[in-house]
Image (cartoon, rainbow, N blue to C red; front, side):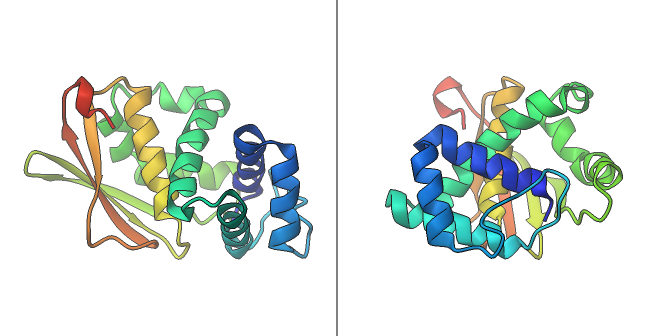
Length: 183
């Protein structure tokens, strides 16, 4: 897994819970590299799982909820790091339609050796479905990314987690909604 994700995870914990909390998470996770990550490095995805598990335990918070919050944070970081990419698309649907064919292909160019998840879309009654598939169990991060994508494009939609979803294969239904339904 690319180091950029780890660096952003550490920043998310710092900003959300404080540097002392992050240090306790690092200690609790007991990683062999002591959570020394670089944006261009490659690290086992299990390290991210250990950090999330430790953060969940120390914050007494649901790990899935933390991952979703991190996904929303990560999309906001993408807004800063890759604005040229996001502004190519006029809507959340257009961006999500191109994650697999364009964005993840560009990720592979920027970060050789990256193995991004499969993200595909298709129509469904009353909306469209985003399907996530990965050897990493981070569907809740993807869910948060999709939620923040809707916010970024100022769209009034509901994002629903499909009940048959699991951590490495998930589907999210996006349906038009009202202001009170957003996200």
